[in-house]
Image (cartoon, rainbow, N blue to C red; front, side, top):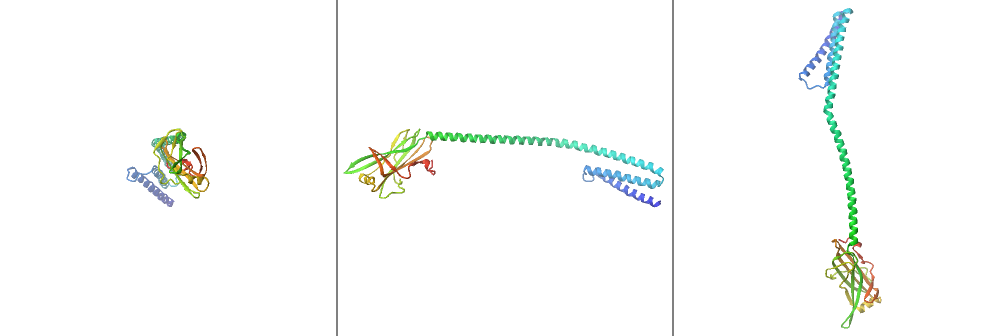
Length: 309
């Protein structure tokens, strides 16, 4: 019997010492002699204090009264009552503190959540505004493109357009030498004025066909002029001995006449038109001859991708 009492005393001492340690730990935390503890650690230490305190009291009661159950049971009931009361109070305080923390978190994080929701709504509104702006910009770009295309088409329809119309042929005799004079005729078939109009013309003979007869090197420019709608302009032209030209007509040699016209339209754009004719093959009607065309250089600037307007 004495051995059981000694064991209960030892258990009581250990439980009491453990409870005292937890109590001392909580005391230091209360007076801020330890680093700040989380609510969970504080509550756990308090629960352990109550539990080990109960074990200590129960052990000493059992050691004091031994097997006298009539005296031991009331003492244990009292200790159990205090343990349960302490547990209920502890649970209530913990629950109250938990709800206080929840309310504090709602007070702290509620506005943050509202701000986050407002920021999300603002971002969504900004996104919708950006999408609307992009669509508006695309519509404006498309409208601008249509306007530009319309204006370009209007410019093209109204601009000046110089074309090679024909050549005037005259014959002169001087010192028994008969010469033919070939004068190109240009016509503005556009609807507005051709400005800064300059034309060049050159003639050349060859015993064999030329693949590229078009060479205006050293060909003089005509004086700067302008041409209104449907107005014809005569170039300086060129001339050659009729006897040589007749050989070309007979197919014994080749005669080439070629030139160009450069001008600006009223919109400020530059334009170029070229012509190239050859004998044999021309048909003479009065003073007008319709030359046979060369295989190239009968075109305008639209046919020259590299031409700078």
